[in-house]
Amino acid sequence: MSDANARCIGQIAVRRATPDDVGSIATVFGEAFDDYRRGLGVDAASLAQLWRSSFGARVARTLVATGTDDRIMGFAVAVMPGEEEFATTSGRREPPPFRAIIGLRGMWRMPAIFVPMVLAFARRRTRPNEAYLSFLGVAPTERGRGIAGALLAVVESTARRAGATGILLHTARENNAARRAYGRAGYRVVATTRGPWRGPNGVDGYVAMLRSLE
Image (tube, rainbow, N blue to C red):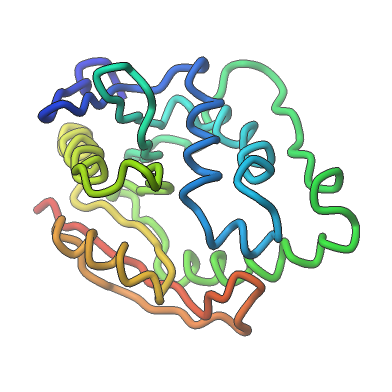
């Protein structure tokens, strides 16, 4: 993504993320992804701490949405055709402190919530000419302001310039609010995968949704 992708939509500015934004991105993630919190049995601050290094490694593929005070209200991680999602150049990535935060007794939660996600991606993985929307999150206090739509619009324009024929994403099968929002943005379900179990996050399956750019 280049700075040419920066765009103002109403009072929402969408720009490329910088390493200085990683803490705020992780904070939004911790607040917005309640299924991850349920699955790991942690609060928002702990979830943010667990994923901070992961977002640091993805910062080159991340857009942030800010208000007039430049406070980050939402973010999107999007991988264009031919790109790698983890594209950090900042050196060795620090391992997430899973053991310190969730403890040995909680480590079973990791495969329990992530195996169904892996199965869903295997069912409908990104094709060489498609972009992939890996994460999209909006702070709960900022929802309803068009932030997700603004981020999706910039992801779409970036994907078109990159020559992508579509944008793929995955979301929980029961996440009706997200599915409706993506549907309004032109995404349609192209695959559904039920997990082998209903994990600790209460998710029993995932859908792959595609936005055609052809």
